[in-house]
Image (cartoon, rainbow, N blue to C red; front, side):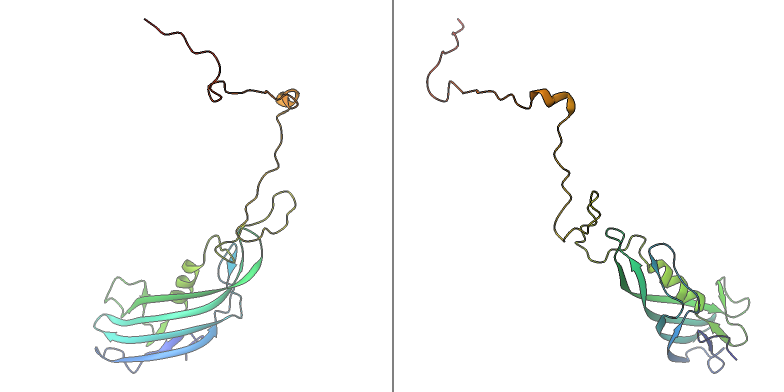
Length: 186
């Protein structure tokens, strides 16, 4: 009997090349998956659709998995649900038939490590809640509205402060048509 829902019996297609069947299930991983800013909760259901095909070397598992992860925006720190959809393809080899990392054991294929690894690799390292997230204002900590950017306050270097009140009244003599012309070189 399979140990968990991701362990699927393939007794009916083992060593029958060309035989195939499809399997669907909704089940949680049972452990928290992921690290950092994006994780799949212990009880989050994974929607799994898999095609199991018998080939000469073993059982070829081709499928898709979908799950909603919990993420924190790396720019503005808002928590949001992140839909993760992955495709996978893995050969579960018969003993000694292939160099595969996964084996058919007691006519069962264990999809848990395959699906878990695919989901973990699909989780973003720096998730964002929306593509135009502007992040946080570094001074106030307030969330910036989309399309805005932080503009640092204009400060004057104290070394130049004495010149702040000084304004030069400069006019361009050539633009008014008046003024001296440069002497000609001969």
